[in-house]
Length: 401
Image (cartoon, rainbow, N blue to C red; front, side, top):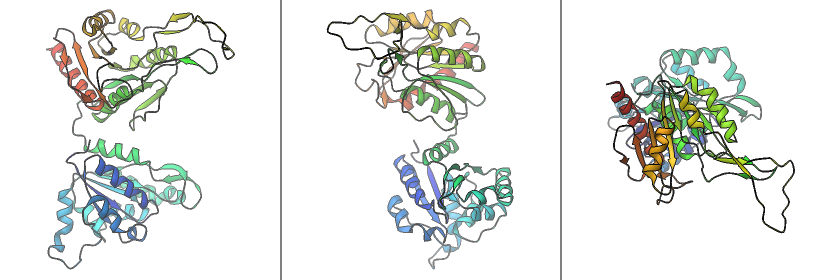
């Protein structure tokens, strides 16, 4: 996801410096070319050799090591990077940047670069709350530097409060957002549904399906990266939403229907990727159903068809559905397209290799009103999400032409 991106990670002298090593490893795993600059204080916590091993590149620790070209090394590094990430960013380094000081390799290079800069503060809670620090942070924001707010938790000093380095997954999300050049969904409000629903039988059992929500979460992530304001309504699962996505947790089909009804009016695009249960038990047993000697009949009733209900009040909104079919995929999905007043429907057959539940890939066919079906090759679900968002924009352009 970061292939061919050039990132410089600046490491300053705080205990969270050890977490920077894992950040560098994650960025390299995502395909980025990574270099590291360390302040002298950072080297008191983690050795340069650690980062040299992880990146395969020399670590810049000082400007004048006695070699040829040392006088312009900060300019060379400043021009090389697509993005600078300071992790952790101490109160001291933030104060220097806020006032334009350049007294080490990192601050000098940061002053010389025109690349975006992300700062990841980490410090004691009292330092973080200090008005002098807060003023420095606001000064940097005013100059266009991006600051990833720290979290609240246990600090190195043993206290609990604000100042803990943001989670690495969140930092990676911000890095990907800073490097995303497409902003074609800026100003759009997108509603995505994802995952299964669970329909309870008794206090310990439920009816469900194999959906994990990966496709819906990939859609929410792709839309957020391209500038959209995203609300994600998710059934039960363990997927992590992309940073900045508004997550609404539900369990049953009825809860998902209510959440969609609540959030739909404020959105202009609906992506219904959830695998909603078609049936629920007629009655919920208040106690665990005991095992008997013979067979048991389980009366079921239909759940609400959320897409059909949404289609009745569609207006100018774009509605996209997902259709899981194991036979006659095109005719069955064409009927859904018409009956549910959809603009597009994404068809996938879980019997196809690589296209089932709980996998990172999908093989889909896109059905759009007035166009021949498009059969897409096996792609990652993230690639499917990006392709779909682009296809939606094309469909909108053709509708208004």
